[in-house]
Image (cartoon, rainbow, N blue to C red; front, side):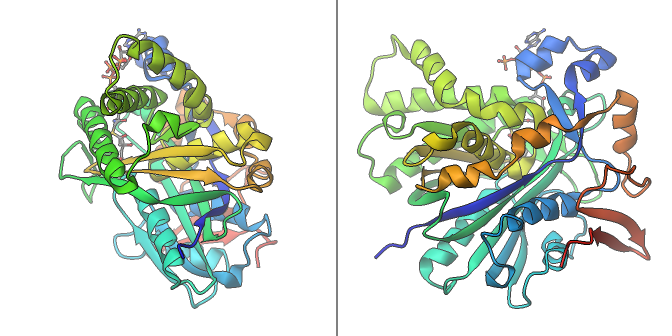
Length: 406
Ligand code: HMG
């Protein structure tokens, strides 16, 4: 018998600082509407010097563990997905393993494939549990990233920072993941970051093309794997996309609807109207966090999932969702899931909207100071995350957890 496996609980985290992008646009001499309307993004989270990829991920996981739904001693696998790692050999996950007080009998690995890494982790963890190898234990998947591009570049407006931690187990209380999924991989140079560079390089327009091309191919593969009873838009109540900027999710949804109409043999006469209607009801509301946090690479799709959960609340149980994950380079996956009867309870603990509203606005000068290599400042009182970066001593990174941490 196939086990029902999926996301049992989740924790989200983004730094306590934000930059309003209309302010940045004015300073850079760009029309603000190009950013707020053309890209659809309004703010981005900015990482202060006392935070890094490790602390973002650890704080997201710490928030999940604070719910009391996952016992630390039951975690048998920790997969940390990131494309902004802190060391070429030592994985981000091993810092989290210590900071979170996880058991020594816990497989701990860092995963990389650009923004797709978080979904790679989710799928590997789901299959580990489904196979029976987990023996009742939980897998923790943490997607954590800081999106950085060169100052003054057009991509500067698509930065951001944040992390999402997912607990994966049998009989999940949040979202059951369906076994069928569609995958696509192809070597392309749309976005990359050579080992000696802090900021990503990108062929922006080509990356949009690669993303949409990968969506078409992943949908074809998914339709074969799922032996579909009907087109996707009649099967899913909501659609979530990897969202480097919200307009990308609009372009993706337009492509998905057109793809599914073609597959269903429908005539194109009312396609444009159908796209607008479907986007407004089934995609746009779940972009609320992406508009305010920016691109969080591996975590981006899961910020949309958190937004959907928080806003849908009591209406979640039984609803189905389609998810598209894209990682430059590239690898992509389309999959679906269904919310569990207890999903509203899980959503009620997230605290995402509250966290976003509490962020402190920065000036462009303060944001530029934060963009320097980390470790040059200490947090002001009241500004200290539960787990923070202390700096580098003798080539070794140091972190501190607040007193309450076991
Ligand atoms: P750009 O050159 O700044 O912008 O690059 P543009 O000229 O393409 O304009 C953007 C939109 O604004 C256009 O809308 C314009 O018409 C509109 P569209 O035609 O696309 O619908 N516009 C205006 N709207 C209102 N008022 C105005 C105005 N002016 C223009 N005055 C680009 C944009 C996304 C290429 C750039 O920001 C970039 O390179 N970003 C980084 C790459 C990226 O995010 N790619 C997305 C796909 S790849 C991906 O998602 C993977 C990734 O997350 C990495 C990973 O996998 O790890 C990036």
